[in-house]
Image (cartoon, rainbow, N blue to C red; front, side, top):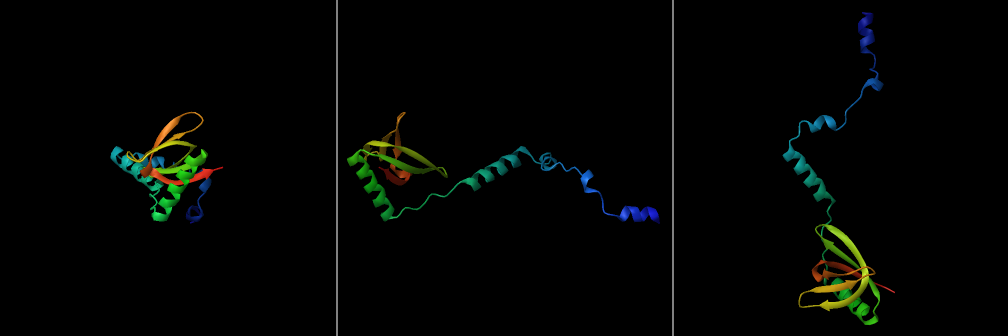
Length: 123
């Protein structure tokens, strides 16, 4: 009976070495792993903010101010679920093609007007 009393005591958890998530990888197919990675990537994406006419007017006004004063602006853009920030001076605006050209210290680049979420004048 003493043997069974020893067995009923609490087990020593320090001897337990769990392999964590490694033990589940062997059961997952490459298709499952691909779907899990895509799901995690989709969860990190942020939705495109909806701009009303007030927001668009503020963006347009800040673009005009930066062009007139020749000052730097910070442009916040949204593309594929991620926000990016660019800082530089606006060199020209092409309304026909709906793009603006921004020149920073190192290079000049083009940003589509449809991707712009916010423009801040830096003075």
